[in-house]
Length: 243
Image (cartoon, rainbow, N blue to C red; front, side):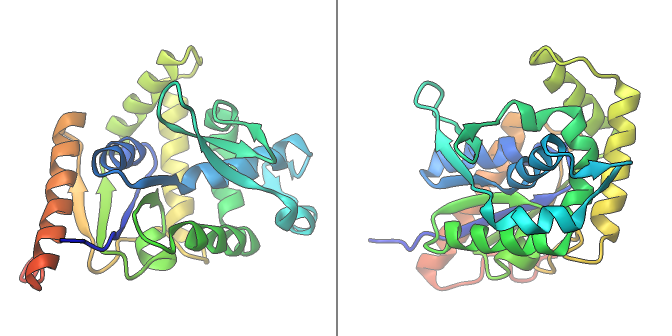
C-alpha cells in the first residue's frame, strides 16, 4: 500500500542534537534531510566575509541588497552519504560551524528579510513532503501542518559540553565557558526576537534529551514517526489525549 510521505519538523534549542537526530531519521526512512540552521549560518558567513557585521551588529541595509543573490544549497557527499552546505557553489560546511559564525548567527537570523528569503526556500524544498527538516521555526512558521513535530531541549550545560566535544573532535579550539555563554546568549536572542521566535508548537512532542544517549534519541524519534505513519493507515490520531 502506498503511503504519502510526510514532513517531519524538528525544532529546539542550539546544540540539542537536532541535526544528528534528523540525519539519522532521514537516512533510516529514506527522506531528504534539510538543516535550516546551516542556511542561516551560510548567510552569516557571507556577512562576515563581506564586512556586513561591525561592532557585533549586522549591516542590515547592505545585506538586504544582496540577499536574493545568495544561493544556499545542499549536496550529498558520496563518500559519507551526508549532505553538505554550499554558498554560491562553494562548500562551506566546515566554515559555518566556527564559533565566529555561532556568535553572530542569531543576529542575522532575527532580520525579517533574511527569514522571509530562507523560509521561502525551505518551503520550496519541502513542498513535496518526504523531508526531515530541523531548525527553530519549522513547526510554527515554515510547515505548521507538518505530519510530525518535535521540540528538543536539554540543559545549557549539557549542550555546551556536547558542542565542546564536537569541536574538539574536529580539532577546533574552544572553551566550555565561551560555548556556554554563546548558547545562553543564542537562547535569549532566539526566544525574544520579534520575527518567528523560538517556541514549541502547540501540537509538538517535547523531547528533553539531557540524559539520553544518541541511540536512545534515535529510537525515540523513529518510534514517533512509525506511530504517525501507522495511525495514518488506520485513520486515527497518533497523539490524541496526549500533551
